[in-house]
Image 1 (cartoon, rainbow, N blue to C red):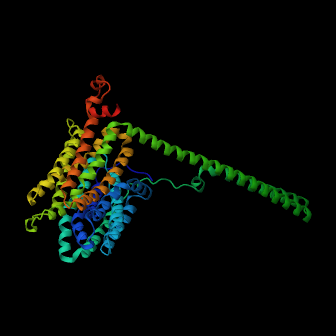
Image 2: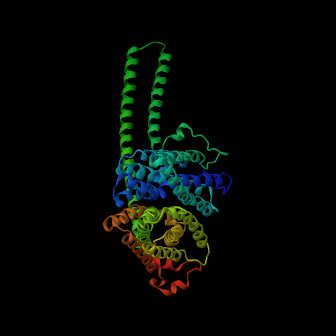
Image 3: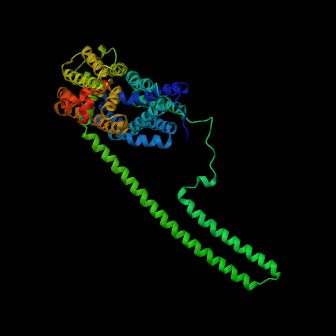
Length: 507
């Protein structure tokens, strides 16, 4: 398959549009699962911690399985994966409407829908990167807002559908809407060269190189047979008389020579294949060793180690509000008549604003992206500490907006990772960080729910969440301070565009 140069436009804008709607349709319900969370609490009567596992799995399983998702997209292509994942998301949502207990939802909504969302996220990002080079940042920023807009709309949509058709009807309708992912996936045309198709290979060219030796041997046997038969026929014609005894003897000699040559060829095939398998196993083992060596080298980087701890603690403490904020308002006995907009919708729209704003700030040369990211962590921790003191809809709405805006720091996280480890190690490092981010997403809401089951109030839970986020932010800040440089003279010789925390990471 021959790929053209990224066009940075043309059909690429269609890819941006369908990727936007794909993330809108697949992530709308899982991110706005807080509305469904209240209904599941009433329907199944389980504890808040156990029920929170449904939404946390749906949002975390895609990140946990990010290596598998990448392999699937690389092996089968973005269009087949997007169409198959559309069936997964729609089927998981529809199956969830028939859930008899909370454990069924763990599979149907948590794992099936979550894995489908992870596959779709990888597919949309991959196909967008294929079509854009110079405008890649803009294109990725546009498609990433699809999930935030989905959170904003689906929070109000699911609440309205529950009032009209009940929980089961809501999940069926949302699942049917997700089938539109199939139409979006069918438009994800791979970027291939159609003007100059590669020449068709001949039968010999299609044969692997390791088999050429064996075919030459077999060809030699056939040639020997033909030579023998030709010599026998010429001799027979010259004598002009049949000799059945000589005919039978010659046939026996030919057959015996064929059997001997075939046995030798077969033995050589076995030896060659055995050596080939041994070399392949050694090569694979060496790749695994290199992977773990690179991982160890990454964790020797102080900033990367602190970044790994910070993203894990941030998702443990910072993700639960998007899932539990509606239940926090209900626990505070806030009158439903005071609701002007669902709190989850406020979080969603402000997350989109935060992604765009923080992404634009990160493009300025005078902005240190790591310190900007640390600032968002510290402010998130303070906002989480303030939730127990919010006793009205207005204060909860303000805190929801602040938390949503700060959660937009996901848009600058790739910038921080690149500046910390370098572009050549970005894929490896980002995969590790996303795995632990998914682990934090999966653990955060159940931990907060267990705190409520234990204390019968959310105050202790959000104090714990705020402490986790602040701890991660302070650790990252300490690791990035310039005072950790072994030699202060080296910092003055650095290029002007090199950040100080990158020097600290190599110390």
